[in-house]
Image 1 (cartoon, rainbow, N blue to C red):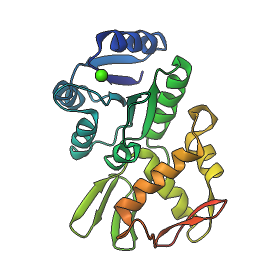
Image 2: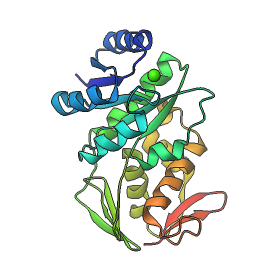
Image 3: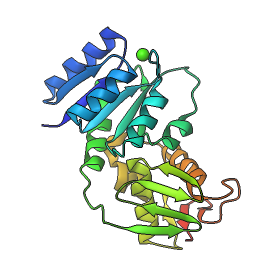
Image 4: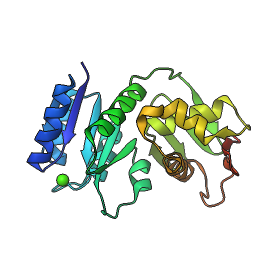
Length: 226
Ligand code: CA
């Protein structure tokens, strides 16, 4: 049985999510703020974290960074409120895997959770260290170092990189990525892939605005030139 941790300060929202997830057979634990979340994530080792961005004390972005800083690669799904102006790429840069916008349908959320857990099971992850330009990428630890900078990778970023690495210097279509990585259940859009690519470029490229390694292939998708 998969364990899901909900990090949300609004009690009604947290309880509602808990009921739905327990009904689906998940084990659920609620954390009311970031500090509690970090303690519980260490002790309880959830398989996936549902992380609200608007939290007291420490916001969701910070919690995400701390979790990745502990070297944990569990899937993190960020919850955002509609109309809330947030930089989605920022969350991805900090190692979040996906976003769900409130209010969301239960079916959509469950699909995203299933997709996240599938990623998180580590299926297919090989012990590969790769070098892309001046970036050293550890696909197992989900970690990139470039010069003195280091970055955490989310699961989807790892999966995208792996697909690009399997077909080096050949275009990989966005649709192919969406189907292979997210599956049709995940309700992704083309922007989903693009947001992850923006985030990947910021980590890998010395100048993300003029990428040398993760290149756009017009009307198709992307290709990797290591
Ligand atoms: Ca909240």
